[in-house]
Structures are given as C-alpha cells and as structure tokens.
Image 1: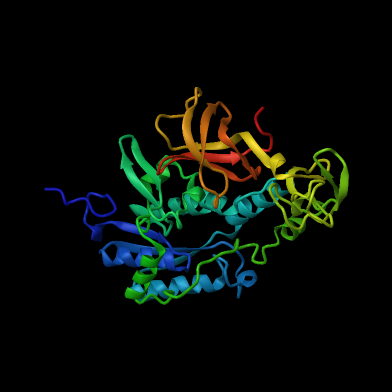
Image 2 (image 1 turned 90 degrees about the horizontal axis):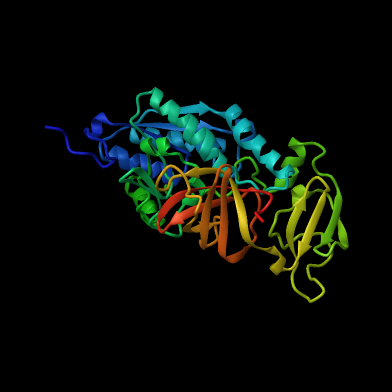
Length: 379
C-alpha cells in the first residue's frame, strides 16, 4: 500500500523527501526551513552568495549581505540541518547586474529581483537542488501553488498585503513542478509567530528593502559606473516640444517620475504637476507632461511566459486583469497573443506604464503569466 501523499504533494513519507530550502538569511526562508524540519522532511539549506562579501559587509536592509549568509548559517545550525553557501557572483553579475545596467541605458526601468528569480534563483539553484537528489526546492515567497487539471498552477499569496506573485511571473511550468511555497497561505504576523515558536535566531530581524547591489538606492550612479558615458546630458522638453531645462543623463529618470525633475519647478502652464512621460536615450531627451499625457490605453509585452490554459495566449483575445507595477492594484484588460509576445488593451487607461517593468496577467487569484513592457506601445 502506498504511503499517503505528504504536505508537499509527494507520494512518500516526509523523511524520504529531500527538500532544498533557499535560505536568504531572513525570517521568511528561516521559517520555511523550520516548518519543513518540524514536519520531518530531509531538509538541506542553501544560501547564494550573489554579491562580493567585502562589498556587502555591514549593509543593513539588503538581501544578500555577508551578515545574511552568517544568519542563514546560524539558523541551519540551530535546526541541525546541512547548510551550503554557493558562490553565484559571476552568474548574478551576468544575468542580473549587467542586464540591469543595459536596461537603464535603453530608457527602461528594470526589476532586478524578477531577473534574479528567473535566472540564478530558480533556474540555476533548481539545477543544483536536483544534482543533490532533492525532490523539491522550497522558498519563503508569499505565493501559492496548486495542482490543476493541466498541471501546477501559480496563485496569489493568501495575504494580499504580502502577495509576491508579481515578482514570480517568469516561473516556468517545469519549475513549478519542483517548487514549493509553504508560506503562501500565511500572513506575515503568523510567520513572525512561528519564528518565535521555533526560537529562530532571526525572529526579530527586519525585512530586506533595498536592491542588494544598490544599497543606497542611487541606480543612476551605479549605471554610470558600469556603463561609462551612459550619463549623457540632454534636454528636458515638454510634450509640445519646448525646452524646459537640462539633465545629466536619462539614466536618472523613469517614466511616471514626479519629483527631482531638475527643472526648477514641477507645474505646467495650468499649475498641474509635471511627470516624466517619455525617455529617448538615443536623443538624450527626457519628455515631461501632465498626468493625462502619462496615461496609456494599450501596450506591448515581450518575453512572455505563459502559465494559463492551453499552450499560448489566444490571438482573438481574453479578458484578464493586469498589474503594471508591483504596488498598483490590478486593472481590467483584454489580452491578445502574438507570435512575438502579447498586446494588452486596458479598459481604463493607466498612468505610469514604464518600459522595462513587468506586466503580469491574472484570472482572479491565478497567475496566467506575464512579460516585460516594451519600449514602444502598440498603435
């Protein structure tokens, strides 16, 4: 007689189910590991060294500083599980940091955390987990995974305030077969409570906030260092073409930006605030205008990852909701599939649709996939 399916969906006892836990050194991944140990799984902790130890020392609020590696090791020792640190610096630089810089000089606003999940964390770490005989890779993300009629499905986290599905749209179907998210049904307060219950050394540690390789938040200066010459001065112009001022490089601006425009004031002729509505890196030009000029009704999406029903987005269109920024509420739209991506027609035009940001498709709680907002909107 077969053993009952365990809590992770495998038809074997927990003790015979090896689970690699991606341990960042924070509370969420620590509780994930502790929960699985408590349930009797064969748990192995792995922490990725993504950024230079010397560069990262004493940078509070970053997700992969040296202190975080130390904290992950302390948690693993506390639970009595094996723990390994993998040096993924070169992969991280190539797949995330270099891509980040290239996107910025093209006038885009990239999201390196998604690229990191898409490359080193899920692709490369999954390969490593399988190499050591793991049946699953568990993370501390607040999303849910369920087995649907056509395979695993990705769902929003149960707690809307903690849902991280926007950042995981690029997760592929084969990856979902092996990924598990034990915190997906929980609230953050419950996670903290479990951290105290398990007496984890990081139970009071604050959440990370900054991009790990930009701890001071100054993206423009980082890009200028990585791509000398990218910070080319140019004109700041209004939507009617009149020159309003000068800037020190389009890499210091993003579509939707309102503050710090560098034109000595932020009002147009009617007294309304001005926003960045367009970036032209080739001409070194920043275009500003009123909120109405910022609104977009239609956009193109590239590098689409499809997790919805069937093998592709229907070209005749389907009703969905989309998130265009991680902190914005979802908006109703119609999604059309194309050979080279997708097109989104918004029911109500939205402001701040920035090239390089993610456009994630939803059907209620289910993540249908997503892609990157292209620089040129659809006609």
